Image (cartoon, rainbow, N blue to C red; front, side):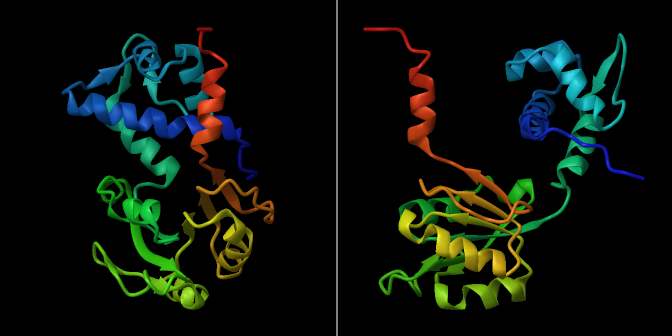
Length: 208
């Protein structure tokens, strides 16, 4: 059976839905309507229903969605019902901050490797990890069967590093550098650039 095509924009919204539902569960709520969920995430009830319809029927008209059931289903859809090993490449301030971030562990993310090429950083301890030299990166990633990586290194090193990562079996890269990575189409790449995000928001600001 051919797998149903799901637009990428829909997939990008699902983590927001899951995060919001988890917050509702912490508030003691048990059910939610598509409109109430939409109000929290800044979209419409129709959009919520359309997005979820790509994956099945999760609610009943007039009664809404069971929050815990929908959380469970979204976790399965997003594959966050398991542990994913992630490597951080670049042990500068940002790389160390991400490695120390406590919010990963309870969301299925295990930062298991941290690399750099700076002799002043290689060998230092960050949480439970020892910074490794990038020369061992490909072998270490293959040995630990890591599928995801985060780039927090200088932009001029991003492309060459990404090529090594892909060659080692990495399938998804979160890129914190300004570099536009040229990689095979099957590799998932997300770019995080605060400057670009701020520039986008500037468009909506009023004039002085």
